[in-house]
Length: 319
Length: 174
Image 1: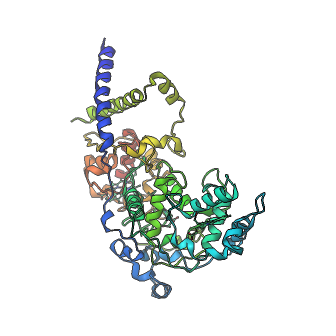
Image 2 (image 1 turned 30 degrees about the vertical axis):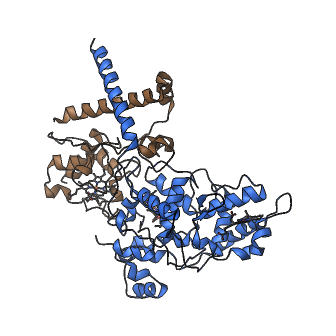
Image 3 (image 1 turned 45 degrees about the vertical axis):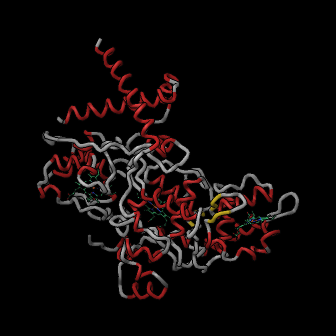
């Protein structure tokens, strides 16, 4: 009898719940971490978040800060990031170039259209993601490579989650080494993509109910998260794709190259958020937001994941 | 609301949500059976990624992109603290369980721990009320809507017992 009553109650309740959840679907109110409105598509926007931009805005400032004895966390951990080129990374670039030159059955390769060693693609990676009018979509670097491979080389298996794609992206990005990042968000549809990406970056999701910004704005950014050193979202895109030995996403082999899409997935995995697919609309928007947050900063490729250097953990950090 | 009834309430709530989802899909028992075959998260083990779409997510296409945030849960705690401090310590330092150490220095774990939150090394000496601490850990949004701690209670990362054990560890005076 009692269980019968509970069942009826559950049914009624769940009907109410169904109707209310249908209504909710149109106007779901998400929770956001604070600070969205302060973000601007330029690396100097960091001033509004960590007040450390003056220490790492260019190589001279960084050198001075280090010479002045500033601790890494006082610089928002930016000192690790783009100073030294990676020799192992350099070797992996060769693999990327090999794919770039690899001919398909009709003897065509990326180089057939974009010049020997990609001569015609100098600097372009600094402008990605961007709107491609022909396919009517905002494309990340890896997605543009996928489009070219599929349409023009009949390679259907060079998507943004594959090894050839990531290694080519790494190579093409290296052709923009030193170029100033310039993701143009001044007009549609890029302006809207930036705003959507920003909102996703501050939206609370996953089992922990974190936003990306939970870790990538203070107090977490600039502090130690166990051994790890999360920082603000400004400037770091300048080193992506990045050589990331020995870390890989489970089950994947990118020859240790992490594109920005992989990095986003990796952080989603770390913080128990449902992982997006590389190149999907929402993941592309997040990348637009992150890369535009590096506008004005010089690309530096190939760089290795700084986390390998753990000397800092030996030092005694006071709260 | 008493502590007990609050827990009952949320359990029923969860059940209702489950039923509602099954009804929405319109495949009743089939879905329930498939549900049972899904992997379960074992605390201390990696979290099965395929279970994560039950929480809000970033996607535009999947349903989880439109899920509302977990309701804020206000809880009370008026009991004695007689949990298992050793188990509590294990939970607090385990990366795939409580992982308090990622952000806090803990008693006996002063080095190598995180510095995001305040040190909890001398937490016992500060004599903060149990009810405050319990609420902080269960759902910190009640204390601070923009809290940087996970919502351990509402999203079933830690059970009430787990939290009592962690608290017994934090409040223990050597």
